[in-house]
Length: 431
Image 1 (tube, rainbow, N blue to C red):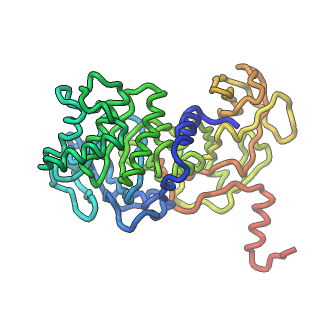
Image 2: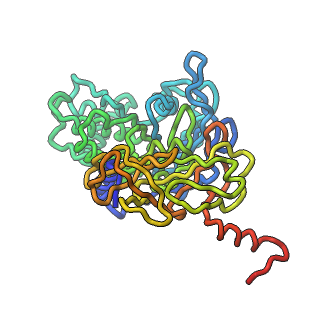
């Protein structure tokens, strides 16, 4: 079966993580903006009672212009949560506010039970790992690691013991006397992580720490970071735009766009059941076909790839402004011969994706992605496509493009929909 390249890379990395590691924690709380629920399906955390981090109605503005629009979320004890989004989405601003480097316009940030508003970064007991490593070039590895302890007045044998403990945990033995310029990028990143962990922080914050590394080293460091995080059972907020990193390491992924957290769920759910069109487009590859609301309300929908009309399993709520069918490439079947119930299209482009070839197919007003089973389909070639209603995911958004509340909608055959309606009609026959 076809897998996107970023999922293949994530799979390779996750294979190296022990199956006995901490299981994926459930989503923690509903996403809110200014008190309004954003993702009704966000479940309660299965971690220890209470939260390591609680962010409530956080607003961040630069020059009077909001860049974070009142987001709320929590991180459970020992949970690894990734804030995933494109550049400019506001994810780094959120992390910097949690660390104390940005003063929020409003809202609250609590680490444990204590509000951090007005508390300096030095007193928040957060370990921070930067994209640039930020190691002191004139200090050795041991001196870099010990720096945070010295600022906290840890000295003597206690300092030496804690440095030795983290050096051993990070597999840095023998490097204590080296300077940063004498180490590889991966080794420097382990030193930066060791410096953040040696202070025994309440919360670990990581701002795209692997961005400067090559692909192979990034994959290795993903496994290493996850191993260390689980070994120390430390609550972690990780910032990245790289989907492979997010899928490899996270208990939960929060997707951010234009200052809002639009999705929060386990990695598998984020991929298979995106709750908004942005997440469907941003995470992996997806075909999105918009359903006309008039057709949806009339319970008679037709789309390329499913020639027979179909319907929704229940009427739409009034707040629905946009309705989409989302299909991952692996569920769209494509062939070169016509067949009953299949829809005609034409190949627009093809792309080699490792062990598979992905083709983009124009069918009517829509464009769908599919995996070419032959690997030989070419642009401008006529093809026929088919997909199953059971493989489709329905996305309901409000007029602003944010997820609507309520249980997910499903697609049903018209005959099944009529039968279901008959079952709920008073006096209907139950043959």
